[in-house]
Image (cartoon, rainbow, N blue to C red):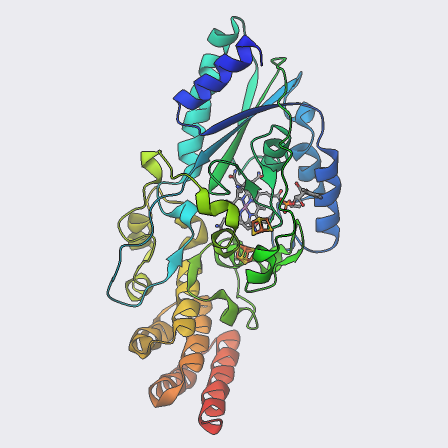
Length: 381
Ligand code: B12
Ligand code: SF4
Ligand code: SF4
């Protein structure tokens, strides 16, 4: 490693990044082929912005920045502590990456600061473009080739020191830098993540069916969660960590040293019923500066209904009954489903009351199916 590369890496570390790697701006052809194939197979359905044109840009740094010569790839851990023991109330789960401040803001600020000092470090003008998640850049492909980590079979980048609990950012630059070598590591024979995924979303090693992934269903999906998948979502209300929780590489992962990623008071295990009462302003207030905002209030309340149905605590029936009468159609539909899953005379009465006054055809259909679920539960004892 040359002096310039050493200084650049030290600069990244001084800003709080845990791992810094460098790769060339050569295109990522394997990843382009794989992503295009995924789109054509329908495995990226539901993400209308994820187009073949975007994949092309995401895998060709020279298209992203004129004169691109290198990609600096940075990773930062977000692994904070687990939920406090023995919390009262019916609680769900938020994925770890969203338990502190919104990483887009945290990483973008750091990457901008990083870029601002590059000319001083290089001793001349430098062109740069920064990417964190939402830009057209394949973050994992860059991180793999820059030696930051290797692709796990769950498609997450696994790092030797911080496991897969890292978020990735890239800086495309016209600086000519000596590239790092990719790591000579693989998952070996392990298939734990594939076996543990509740929805079967890891359809083959390194291949996710986005439309089955709980992360997609609870964050990106704007409409109804497919009925057959709802029981498999469990108590996740935003994202999912199962394929990372079971990963043996993550057992030795070092925790985050970034204060912005310390988990907010109850974000690891939020109490669910109060979330059903939030209006738009309450939602904005509760999730200000948090990635959870991406699900939108209605999407989050839809997820809360599904989680309450799956948790099966009967104390949630009155809150679900109230949601069934008072919310948007999407939330009403999922509240009906949850009541059908909980079953019993109280749920049935709430469903019948709503049935008599509901006007929305989709919600009416959900109520009918939920009433059938209640009756089925009585029949089968
Ligand atoms: C779309 C997207 C999603 C979608 C689709 C997931 C997916 N697997 O792509 C959804 C909403 C489901 C999602 C979920 C999550 N995401 Co996301 N997501 C993205 C995004 C915006 C694009 C990813 C992409 O291009 N996917 C396209 C598919 C085709 O790529 P892929 O699945 O990674 O598959 C690659 C491999 O198969 C490889 N490949 C092909 N052939 C072969 C052969 C071999 C042998 C090997 C080794 C590899 C290989 O090529 C493919 C393309 O690179 C990136 C940010 C970005 N701009 O890159 C974040 C990103 C990937 N997500 C991230 C995170 C944190 C998550 C979640 C963990 C969040 C959560 N807890 O809920 C989950 C993890 C789910 C999972 N198991 O992947 C991080 C991942 C960090 C890491 N350590 O890898 C990223 C990089 C955001 C960031 N900047 O930090 N995500
Ligand atoms: S995030 Fe959850 S649903 Fe998605 S692939 Fe991993 S275990 Fe499966
Ligand atoms: S659980 Fe096993 S197969 Fe999956 S990513 Fe971790 S090491 Fe790889």
